[in-house]
Amino acid sequence: MQETFYVEILGCVSEKQFSLDELVVKAQELFKSEGIAGFVGLLLRLLDEKVSIEICTGQRRDLITCCESAKLEIHQTKPRTFRTTAGKIQIQWKRLKCRACKKTMIPLREILGLRRHQSKTIELEKMVAEVIWEQSYRRTSRHLGTIGAIPVPKSTVHRWVMESNCDELKIDEQPIEILVADGTAFKGRNLGKKGYFRGKGDLRVLLGITTEGKLTALGSWAGRSWDEIGQEIRNQTAGGKPLSKVLLSDGELGLAEGLVGLSKNQQRCHWHQIRELKGTMWKDGAPLVEKRIMQKKLAAILAFDLPNTEFENISPDDERDVKQRILEAEQKLDEMINYFHAKKYIHAAWFIQRAKKNLFTYVRVWLETGLACPRVSSWMERIMREIARRIKRIAFGWSNRGAAKMTRIIIKNILSKQQWQKYWADRLQITGNVILSFRGVSIK
Image (tube, rainbow, N blue to C red; front, side, top):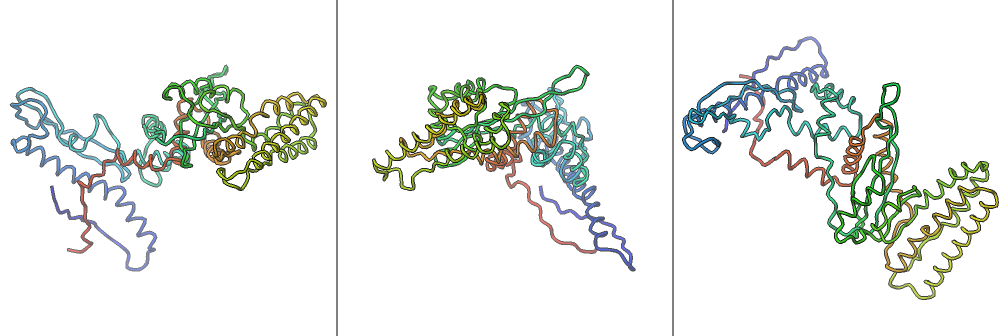
């Protein structure tokens, strides 16, 4: 269907004085409230009338799905309103009824590919999903009402996000070399004794590094233990084989034990090891000066860089030298453990003892396979900061499902932008079947 539209606008401006800003603001208000929405509504009304007449007169049978001897007639006209980024579009679509089998149909709904009771467009849902991971539901609702003149309640925005599948993560087909796991707490939703919601939830994230060095997301979980997460991943792994060569993580209790079998080796993050030593010594009552001294000492022990030579060109002498340096570093860790025991710092001694065997895994893996494994999860911390900013600082009272879903949306926007764009491109169905041309502005 091709039509030429003529837009009639009454313009009245003062000949004495007015600002350009006022003119622009008034023009935007006009087109936002009536212009674009009115144009789209008129175009749909013309299409509905044309298609309905063609079906009733037997010119089109491709949309008829009731019976072979179908004879349709206009049964009723119903008003419908759709929320869009261009404002509210109001139309009157026709419902046709077959005189033979008494079934009814709405041709315009079939052409537009709308679901029953659908009241919003996908492009509006896309706008909401792209805004919601950076600000709260309340601010998103206010943003839609102020900037886009689209009044959408906060509860409706929340329902749209929770019903959407935009957070689905597709695991990269490339083999994963390194797994990185981390977790954080959030203000959860548990009913307290006084009748209000309070409590704390645990959020856990699992990422991977492929053979080509690409970051990929494996998932996020809330209210699930590492044992449950590990079992879920193992069930998805073909043949029960290890998913990666190295697991990079901090010293969270139960993490490595829960993910056992997913990686051949574990590497403790050096940054977390140095940072968390202060907390463990605090539990033992150590003074602040001593905590800082031991942190610097641990940092000096862990300051071990891989040789500059290529893995294929490393000589036996260099390999023996590297292994000797690892042995000396572990002996210094034993001295630190003995010092902590002598000072009755039980928590600190246990902390170093537990991590000792996994602090130089990145060197041993490089000597065996040539894989350059990171020893710190700095890029993981950047992602966790984004998650914490949205989950902890912008909102509270999360359900486990809501926190995990929002985390996946954040991860997908950071790591898998192409997946995010492809998901919405498939849903929007931009196929080139609509062409609009602006032929200029004139006075008649």
